[in-house]
Amino acid sequence: MLTLLRGKRISSFFSFIQLRHASLSNESELLSKARPRFRSRLSRGEASRKKFENMEAKEDIKQTTETKAAAEEKIDNKYLKKLAEDLLKKIPPDMVMRTLYYPTTKSYILLAGVKQYDKVHASYLYDLMCSLQPDSILTSIPPDACFLLRTQENYRTTWGTYVKQRKDLTFLTNHNPLYLSEITLDQIKLEVLMNGSIHRTPEIFEVGPICIYQAKGLRPEAPMLPNSFLSPILYSYNNPERKTPVFMTSYPTLKFRDSIVRNVTLPKMKKIFDDLIVNLRSKEENFDFRLLYQDIFLQPAIDYTLEVMKQSCYTGKKILAVVDWSMVDILNEGWQTLNPKIQSLQKFLQDKNEGLTDESYLDYVEKHVILDMLMEDYIKEYFIDFGIFPFSGEGIFGREFSAVNTMTVWNYNYNRYLKKMNALEKTTDTFDL
Image (cartoon, rainbow, N blue to C red; front, side, top):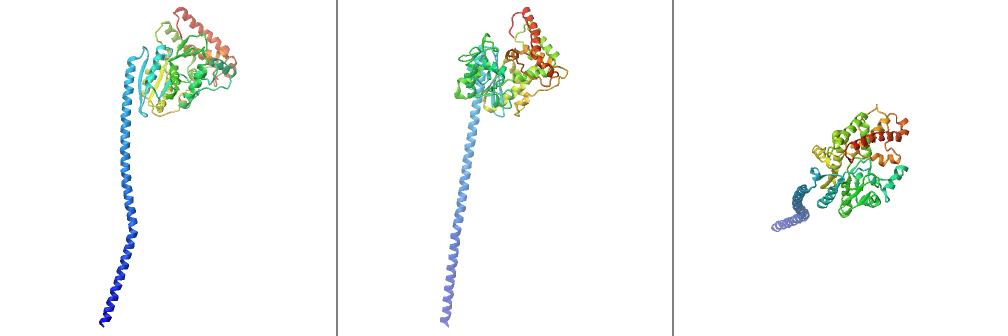
């Protein structure tokens, strides 16, 4: 009995040992299976910790970079202000400087008001660009200026062919631009211009070391004068490594003139001409008739120029804008109330179309004659002398019947108003329109 009981106990003990061993084996197996998962959790935790540390490091680097950039910007702004202050102390007589700021791009515009045909202004402007090293330059040249023809020949000859034969020639800029790029002279276009129209037309252009001399109009006998508005072109061409773009900032000439004629009555245009005569008789120094009728002759061009200036701020931090000295204060005032939203240049080139339906095509041509007398003989010299009237007169009453007599009407009115100007010259000292 005792033996039997002992046998059962031993059997039970071995069964217990076997079960315990199996249990331990299962636990060991479970642990062995759990360890990789535990290790993976440890790995993920370690990766997360390292990732967090990397993020903190990157954030520190970012903050350091931003702090450094802000410090550099602060230093750069101080430099620009100091440079502007130094320049303001040395500017020649009748030259005007203003500093404008565009917060969206944190750009500065140095607004330089110069006299177009002044050697001191032209040479000072070149030195200014060498000191400032602007990222971009704006200059008061219209995108439809005749010398911007894309040619490798004498531009006077090319222009005559273009006007007379309506030859399919292209310009370096767009006469009716939508975007800033269409009125931009980059290094390639600057080389085409300098090696073409300017160097190939020595009777009109003479290139000096720091300024370009230009004869007014197409007459080779006209005296050559240093043109301040051409100095940015010379500077950028002479320093190709800086790749400084030059923007043609003025309102397109033909579009501007036709817009004025379509929105000003003939009686008012005659009155403006009479006002010019009166002020020329009084020999008022620095008289600018446009200031008497700013809404007609200046405001559309000012609005267009301000938009070009604003868009140029997206091309760099240091911008130089070269404008006529009489326009500086008007542009500065307009900048203070500038619409920050970018707009298409085309918006500023659209006609008001006030609908002068009671005036005829003959009145339309006469108004263009008066405007040519008021501003300069641009239309006569570049178009009429080649037998071309450059405006379509579309929509003007009587155009279908009177267009064939356009040149006769022009010549008649031109001679009539010229007599008034000549009579003024006989009663006063000689003056230069």
